[in-house]
Amino acid sequence: MGQWVTTIMEQFGYLGIFLMMTLENLFPPIPSEIILPFGGFMTTGSALTYLGVLTASTLGALIGAMLLYCAGMLLDVGRLEKIVDRYGHILRLKRTDIYKADAWFEKYGGWTVFFCRMVPLLRSLISIPAGMARMNIGIFILLTAIGSIIWNSILIGVGAVLGHNWYRVAAFMDVYSNVVYGAIFVGILFFCIWYMKKRKKKNL
Image (tube, rainbow, N blue to C red; front, side, top):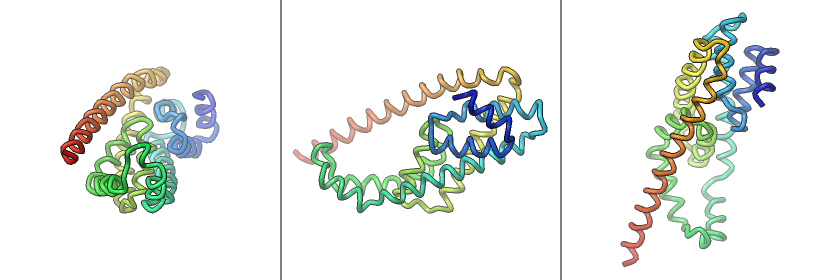
């Protein structure tokens, strides 16, 4: 995977970086932890500049995020209601749960989109619920752009500093990803426990 990605970037420069970042958002198995550090390394031995790589990678991230946002819009609340009506008893979901989740995303979705842009895997997937919740498109683009610029600039900068050792970023990002996923799992676990206790109290 890594060899294919870097070859495309070497052959097509900014266009290759743009395409790889667009695909990275649509297909998370293509890691930005390879694309961005290698892009940073390329600024040390080619005509590519830091600003150019940052611009191309951020535009690619925005286009990929917008495509997933549009995909999320196809999964509107009406369709989810039909799914819950049919299969909700299996997952113990009700229509009211959909409305609560939608209201929560409307209230906190902006911060969620922003912070998730700096979390591997989630940085791509978060665009789908944003589209489902019909999050204001202007705010979505703005927060996605800001989050992407922060994420991209750091990894590109680290790649430029490490030079030929740019590939070491991937090992560090594996540790970072595991820590973040662990924290998210614990958070979800505590939320589920709290939610179940709350529902039991209501049923008493």
